[in-house]
Image 1: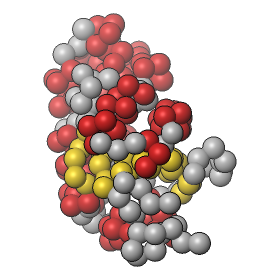
Image 2: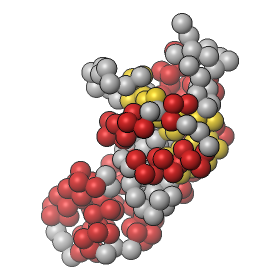
Image 3: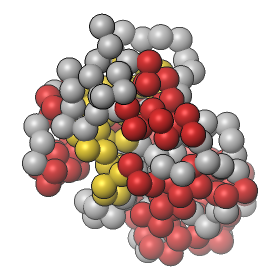
Length: 215
């Protein structure tokens, strides 16, 4: 079935999780916590991981428990030169071209970081809008409220929407709302999602060049 809207995650979805971008951000997060909360590295790193698991982003925990000002954190953490780690991806560009529907980015990162990543990959032109962590007052995915807001603002019903993400927790929310889902992962195949690919480029195998499903 064709889609009116494709909601695409950014980090670890449009590029491989092992290429170093997120690893650099993790280190910057831990260093920020060390300085902001006067902690040793090991303690700060444990806090970073714990908040991420509990709230979806480390930032959410830092706001709730420590009153951290989000913009300072976000700009520091995303100060990564992605052009050192990412390059133009022609296969990804072609796969996005074949994927039907209006395409938007929905990320727990910031707009500026998303712009840098998309430009490095050579696929910025495919995406009409970037919905970043600021979109719903720094509320991270997974959030049914935020996804409902996004679909409302886009004027699209969930059943006409495809959500691509590397995190199953985010896809659970999308599926519960009635959207189609695609898990981007190298793990063993699951049967809870409409599509599962190891990289977004593989989606081209499902669609014809004109954007219709292959039989």
